[in-house]
Length: 116
Length: 112
Image 1 (cartoon, chains in turn blue, red):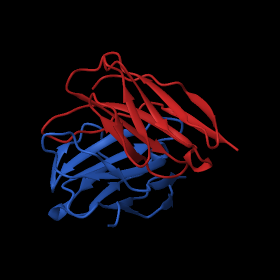
Image 2 (cartoon, chains in turn green, red):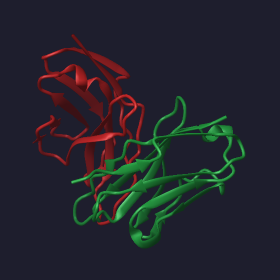
Image 3 (cartoon, chains in turn cyan, purple):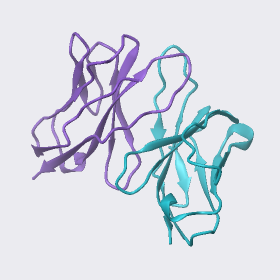
Image 4 (tube, chains in turn brown, red):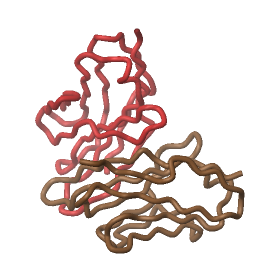
């Protein structure tokens, strides 16, 4: 079974440009999460989809970030316009829809974003 | 979700057991203890989780104290590839999925 995949693995852009990150969750996983780690900081939650709906977007830093999950499969995270402080590693994770027990999230390898 | 406290770093000799402690003194009865690790430049990797009973899988064992205020992750025979940052995360069990809250974790270095 394929794990969570992310594309691209690295992206280098200039300040003011737009970048779109993609995440393909494990097949059949309804929950999809985005996290990021900026330099020297801890991994922080950005948002959570259940299928195509945004369940929680409390971690999104500002309106320059737009996440979508059309059709409830893969997700994209667009940063427009990118700023220097957006540099970091963006992780995607997925999990099955939780039942009685809390869900286990499986992470992708991340996208390293560098804004110059 | 309850806060956790972990030592910032630990060393372990290759082939020996690595015992990583975690304090979660404010844990509630409906909160699970999860362990993840992040090997350099990779995404966090799920290791194990438990509620109150000790758990074991192919990667590790999780020992939770009877009062549930602390736990220990045990890697029985550490290898160089186990060098990573290990995160102890406490998270409520509920009918809905929720985010993980990562702290600073423990940097485990396995020495040859």
